[in-house]
Image (tube, rainbow, N blue to C red):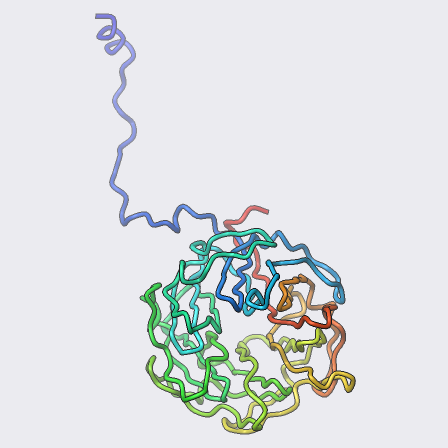
Amino acid sequence: MEFDESKRKYGIPRRTRIQPEEGELEDVDFVKNSRSVIVVTRGGYVKRMPLKTFESQRRGTRGKKGTFSASEDNEVMHCFTCNDHDTLLMTTQRGVAFGLRAFQVPTGTRTAKGVAIPSVLPVRSDDVITSVLTVSEFPDDEYVVLATENGYIKKTPLKAFEKLTSRGLTIATLGQGDRLAGCQKCTDEDDILIGSKLGMATRISAKKLRPTGRTSRGVISMRLNESDRVADMNVLPSESAGYVLAVTSSGYGKRVDTNEFRTQARGGKGVIAIKFKSTNSDDEVSCLRIVDEDDEVLVITARGIMVRQRVKDIPSQGRAATGVLVQKIDDADAIASVSLVPVPSYEEDE
């Protein structure tokens, strides 16, 4: 009776309605879109770390240890920064691509070894990850451009990879002895810069490349000397001039204005991108990156030592210059990778 009296005295009609949500919630809806650093080692291990683990440092310093380095198998092959909601397009040296979200990569500490890639992706034991591309969207006017160590290049619509899963797909047919060297996104308005280990580079227009299917081999991008091979490939956006950041395996680097690399016909030998110190005859180009003066980069050595630094602290020089010491490394170590630090996401707390 007391409850009935309370209902008559205080009861009011429901003011809210419960309606079914359109669509289904996925794992990504419950994950914060933070910025992370992902490291892939030569021995086939991968891990993810928060970017805030590495604060910005001055150039020429030794940096922080970013991975376990007790053996050669743990040498760093790839280090890149991304947002946790990004899709990772991981390609192997045999031309097979796998897709997964960045947050699906297990986290680890700076000195942790990471987890074996086969526990995350079905990569064959005799294959290795040679390139990783971060993708946020799959627009119709964008392409995936691939370069091989022997100088071949191809362009495939990005839409062809929208349904890519961790099961993998063939994205290129490679010749005997050839391996995949680079994988980037581009549009027809962009240019593509391809650099070789011996310091040569060529710039070609993406519009001149005919779109092909996933299983095609591609065409020759640049003619290489017998002892040379493609070291890296980057896309020059049409709306930004910027600089080419060239870093050698011994830790020397420089910025070069992109206007110093004129557009050339496909199949040429290219022009000099960087010269090497006369005291270091074994030096070679480790990587090329397209950067702006306000960017930050994360430089990592084969033994996992990382330095995060501002691009404006690295001087701008001509193509024929040898550069300055970007990161101090030990005699048995070498620069393995340089990655751009992404801008903060609006979903990430300051």
